[in-house]
Length: 267
Image (tube, rainbow, N blue to C red; front, top):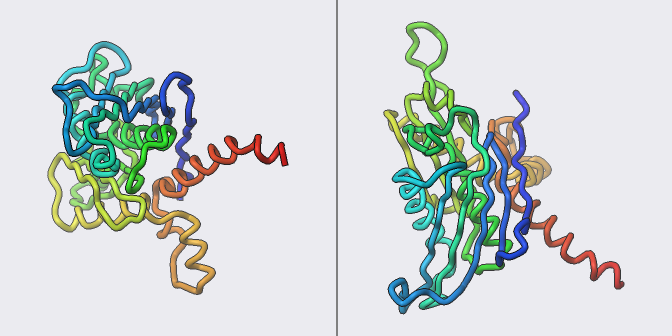
C-alpha cells in the first residue's frame, strides 16, 4: 500500500485572534481565525443562541457564489458542534483564508468547477475546528472530515470502479462522483454528507464505510483491538487515508504540552 502523506497543522499562528490555526493537506493550505463570543450587531442577534458567522476567502481575488455556498455548509456544520446555547445574543466568527490549492484546482482564482468545489471543504472544516479549539470556544464534540471520489478503473470496457480518498483535481475531473463526509469525534454521528455526480447505493455504502474508517478509527484504536485479540486486518483497519482522529488528538495534545512547559520548568 502506498504511504499516505499526513496532514500538518500549527495552532495559534495569528497573535491578534482569539484562536487560529494553519492546516495543510492534499495540496491545500488554509489559515483560520476564530473570535468570540463577542457582541453581535442588533440585526444579527438571536435571543436564544449565538450566531456563527463563517467567511471563506479565496487564494486571490474576491469570493463569489461558490465561496458563499461553502460558507453556508460550514456555518450549518459548526452550528451543530459549538455550544451556541451558552452564548445568546453573541457572535462567533470564523474566517478561513485559502493560502494555496492544488494546481488547476482554481479557475480564475475561484472555486467554480463541480467536484473541485467539494475538494477544499475538508481542509476548510478541519482548519475551522482547530481554530475553535485554539480559541477555547466550548463545543459538544470535535469533527473530522474526508473527501472521496469514485473513479472508473482503467480496464477497457469494464464498469468497475475504485474509491480514491483526498482526491486531486485530476481525480475530480475523471470521477463519476465526489463526496465529502464529516463525523463527530465519537464516530456516532454523521454531521455532513455532500455529494456530486452519479453513484449507486452500493457505492455510497462503500464510501460511507471508507470515510468512517479514516475519520473515526485511529491507529491507537487498532493497536488496542489487536492487543485484545480481535481479528482485525491492520491494513484494512487503517484505510487508504490519514488517521484524522489521531491527527486531531495529537495536534491538540502537542499544543497543550507546549503551553504547560512553564509549569514543568518551575517544578
